[in-house]
Each structure stands twice: as C-alpha cells, then as structure tokens.
Image 1 (cartoon, rainbow, N blue to C red):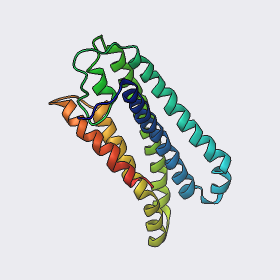
Image 2 (cartoon, rainbow, N blue to C red):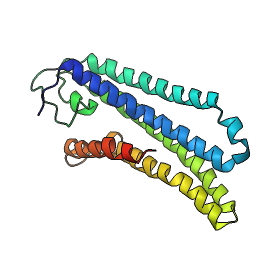
Image 3 (spheres, one colour):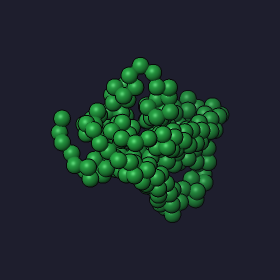
Image 4 (cartoon, one colour):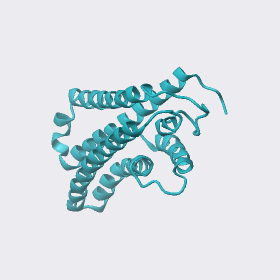
Length: 199
C-alpha cells in the first residue's frame, strides 16, 4: 500500500469523478453523432458543425466538473479520523466516505441521486438514439449497407454497455454480499478496460 497525501487523494478523487461524469455525457454526444450520421446522413455536416461539436463537448465537460464539485464540497466538509487506509486501488469516493467519522448519509443520498440522474438520463437518451438507428438500419436494402451502418455503431455500443453496466452496478445497484470488495474490482475493470475500447 502506497501512502498518499490528503491533497493528493482529494485531487485523485476530483479527477476520477470529473473524467467519469464527463465520459457519461460524451457517450451521449457520440450516440447523437451516430444517430445523425445514420438517420440524417444528408444533413450531417449541417447539424454536426464544428460549432455544435465544440458546444456539445464543452457542455459535457462543464456538467462533469459541476457535478464533481458538489460531491467534492460535501466530501471536504466531513471530518476524517481513525484508520486512514483507503480500502481501494485509489481514492474512490465511496471508499473515502467509509473513513469519515461523521454521518455520511447526505453524501450517500447525493451520490445516489446524482448517480441515477447521470446514469438513467444518458442511458435513456442513448437507447432512444439507438432505437431510431436500428429502425433506419432495418430500412436499408443492401446487406453491405446494413453491415456498414452496424459496424459504425458496434464499438460505441460495446463501450456504452460496459461503461454504464459497471457504473450502474457500483453506484445504483443493490449492495449485497461484500459490496466494497466487489466494487473495487468492478471499478478497476471500469477504469482500465473501457478506456482501451473507447475510440
């Protein structure tokens, strides 16, 4: 176990949350891009202009940072005492809450509510986008055209499934057995494997 300073641990938590939350919204942006490319191909360059792409990316980053700041402010208000050993591979917010020597109920509720909003909203949007994409693909007459459209979406769908699947299990799913040990390995999978798949 490597020691880490309090400031280093908080920085690590801030960066992990920011990148994870931002990725949630960037995956929605990518599904919108796939939707426009397949369902509205003749209008693609008009709809997905450089300005729109930059606005969507900046909005994703802004929301990611703002949501992270809420969690971080609530975390930094807690007193920490006792064994200061984080039972995780890095300073993950749920593992840090276990070290607090005050009531963490508010933190847990905020994490659960933001988890539901950040996961359910984007996943619903992605499902609707891919529903429209599937309908458009089924209307394509040639097998080659269908295959090309499907291959355009397959890598994104894999990343979406793995990213949101592990996130839902960790932050929203039922906590039975030894959730801390399970979440440690899920988060390791989530933070190492998914970025390798993401284009």
